[in-house]
Image: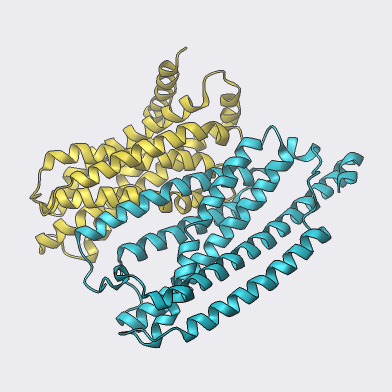
Length: 255
Length: 226
């Protein structure tokens, strides 16, 4: 029962310093997002799709970032397994980070999928096609939904270990998925896809893409921090409740 | 005892248990047969030989996947009864030997089902493969190992969750997608003879190597979760 008898002594995530930093970060994110919105809406019309293409400025950052968060999750999972025995309190922090990044993956991938589906319907006339990118992306979403399910189904103190193992498996699976689906789809070229994505972005639109990329990355970091702090509080509450239950005064002080 | 002998001991134990009850093999065989019949209701395979060739690779693997699921859940349920798993944790033998032994046992069970099922499939669906049929001898074991190695691992993981029977497919399917894609594409290529299945055999092989390594390295963590 190492997790119960070791006090959590890292700085409290709800401390006033962290809160001020969070508030400033939020304001900065909002400013960057506003610039991004302005840039996206004032960028010149696209040659074939007109105004419709503007969804790209939201679709692109979400999809790119949702391939980054799984690796944060994998790193946190590895750290959890590494510290599980030697430093349980740090391991708990790693686990909180893993939860936050996995939920963020699902969130960003969901936004990416929804914007993609809407765009697809408007641009190609169909909601969905089993194209290489779409399929890989759906699999990424499925992987992290299953991760969330394991978290909710696991029993008691085993949640962290089981989900960190699954997090590592999922991260290993992503590149294999990516490559195999690319091979699958290049063998049978999809007729609907015009290949317009390969043609690159016009230089006048680049700054709009970059501002939106920065905005959504900052927003992601903000939510990640918020979710992390929330999970840390839940862990502290659980530790405190255990301490009360077992009558261990040293744990109460750590709270 | 060296590692190899530990694995063999576990394997022998699992085979002996299965030989006495024959639960897993009989269950899987009948289940797969039922799936074959149910799929034949969806379309008439004997009337459309080209379509039959195109889709029966997928049907075969889907049937095997569902059947393997039942056997994989059972394979650890045996260890839970009478707290055998707790005894296994106390044993001085490496934990991964237990895993490798059980995965090999499951490989043998699912392969046995395939040996019976493949001819039945060919008869019921009136299949005349147009590619190199001998390649199936490579594709079937590679694909089965891909299913079984992750399946055995995640069945052990699901043991520690609520409603464990439900948990296994929910975790195993998303992770196995590249392997499923590989085995279905390779089998379909052999049946239709349109393309060379070499690429997919390589994908399967790579998948097997990567995930066998991951499973062997992480099994100790799963077994000793408390």
